[in-house]
Length: 428
Image 1 (cartoon, rainbow, N blue to C red):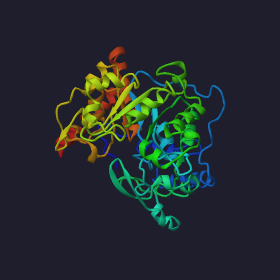
Image 2: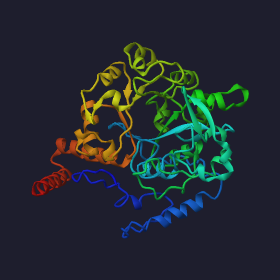
Image 3: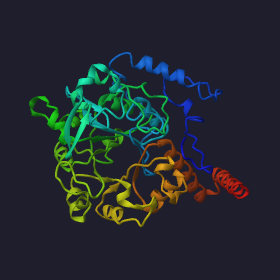
Image 4: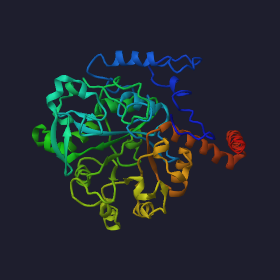
């Protein structure tokens, strides 16, 4: 279950609103509020969409299918691997859910199969989030490779063709999240991911990461000396992604390209003017390509260099506001310095569960959103629960309207809910 404040119930949770909003292919009986009524429909989707190799049709060519533009008033709601708090990460289900819940961007990690097809998957190994261990035909595929200076043993994505990868089914990464969809969804390709965004009924941006480029370029070879980065940009161009940040072309098909590898971003700067974001890890770790510490990466001198290639940074939120014993300490000046260099800041990753929430927020994800948006003043958030962030943005937009044009009825309702909750707390 989600750790939602009683004052701000999560209307996007699976039991209330979500069952009726999963897919364009579903017809949901809104009068049925039973928890089991939704599962057979999911099974129908799985049977229908997984029968062939291609999970989702390529983008339609219908002109003018988008009627609602990308919002530019609030910070960006970035659905981290889709709404993976509800569905297994990087699946059609997770991405559809994020789109339905109001995400501005759907985020994905891009790796490559043995035969050079770009796929959406986070780990270089398949062990943690697929059922590869259950496939006896792949028992002899375990390998040991060095990845970013660490020796890892497992079933590696780069040792499987796309056809073989499509035989696998994805499972939820965290044991405390809903497990009922384990084994129901296959991996998807980068092109299938793009199709989900382009066929949405409003403009939905994409936020793909060039994942482990050094490792991928070592183990996957393309013709004509092409690199992972070349194939990545080629795919974006194939589907019409072009233009600098906030240009007319970009606003029609928004995209941010992200990577932890600075050389990948500087390399593709010669291939496309699409906006790029440099990801920032733990300050004590080092980049996979330049062997710089992320502490060095966040220096003013480096910001002065990298701003010629990127429009922003994507830091781990602990690099912005460190914590001690699960309590936040004083914020660093990272956001202020990045903004001074004209860089946006999109921290990761925001999750609703109590185990991820600092004690400062009293197990309330909406309090966390308020802190990061209004006090730290970041420009976007990577979240596992896109619906919760959208919920918060809707409420706070009503709050702004209330200040400008009279009291908001919605705010009065929320205030009453808070008062009622606090009164009950005192009684107990």
